[in-house]
Length: 77
Image (cartoon, rainbow, N blue to C red; front, side, top):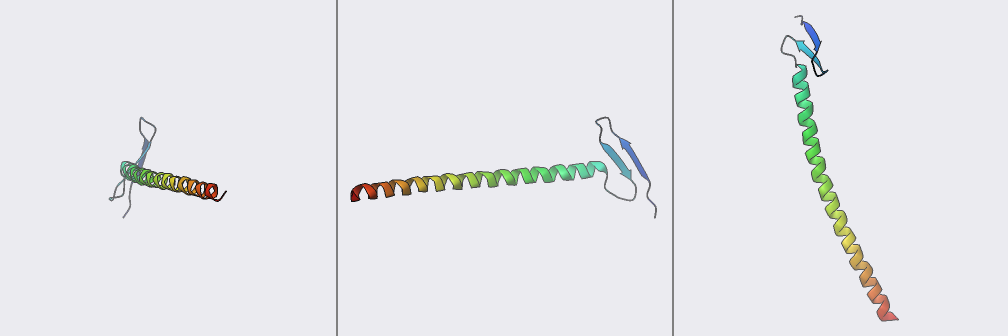
């Protein structure tokens, strides 16, 4: 079975490949990549938010620990 390959450049400068035989077209690939990038962006945003929340929590705990140590040192003097 042979496939014909007809490539063309669209007005916006993208390469469009039309393959017969049920192969993916350029627009299908672009759509799949866009969906993947959107998914990665959402996951990265969620993870970033969680990491910053944990960092804030750790900073607060360190501040409390430092204050506790200073208070203990002041009572020993």
